[in-house]
Image (cartoon, one colour):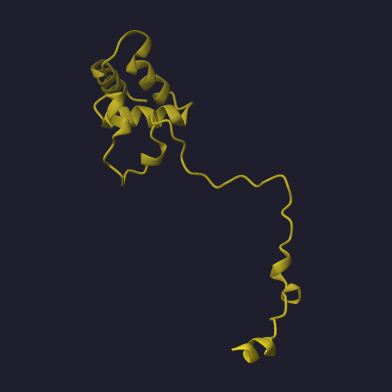
Length: 113
């Protein structure tokens, strides 16, 4: 990495608010380490919303590719459901031979009216 890139990152990190336990600088460092994709998504969302965590839950940018993966929302992205462990029972009605024959209309009903 060139010195110019390192200097830009250092300056950017210094501009990030936060101190102590909830330091957004620590989140940025974790994201920039390349070890945790979730940290990178979180840092980008925080950056986009001006480092205000509460604004992420109200994010109006629905077309953002990271929108379904936003942190701090308490939701998980939609995933395909895991296959169940129980084998499904075959539906008896799917077979054409298993269908009940149609009832013949009774001639007694016609006589009574």
